[in-house]
Length: 192
Image 1 (tube, one colour):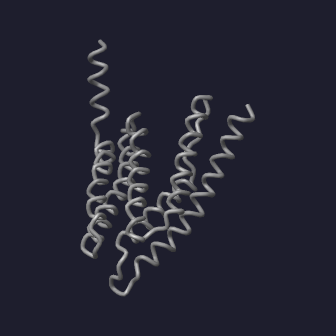
Image 2: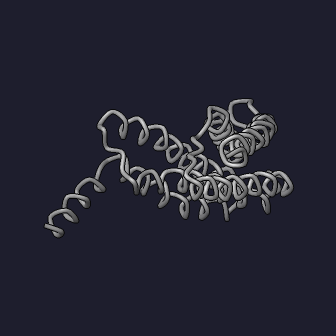
């Protein structure tokens, strides 16, 4: 009986949404590779792979809900894949001079703090669900990074300036959503 249960569990793990999440994780070294070679061609390829990977984030969540294929591994891997994709892209852009290191430090600090906070809340039996602010943060960071990876001017559009504009807005929402999570933590755990 136990062997069947494991086999059934494996079958539910092997689904399209989880495959897309794993694909997003495997896209990270490709993006990193392209960002080690500055230049318009490599920047374009990094941005293209990043945008495709970012799109899989929307697609895997949609498919998981539509197919009722949400799994525990998917719930663990999906946010981890998102954070790895965004943060590795940001870190790679620092030595290229395309993103200020202090902005990356603030964003990474927020991510680490909220992950820890959610872990503490979970241990206390409180679930702090992702907020609309958190989702908006992810979308804005993705747009900003895609444009900052492009960096160069294409079709008369300065993608670096556009990316920095979106990154400033993303940073504000990132910090605001962090405050929002701490408030939810206070309401759910500290007032128990």
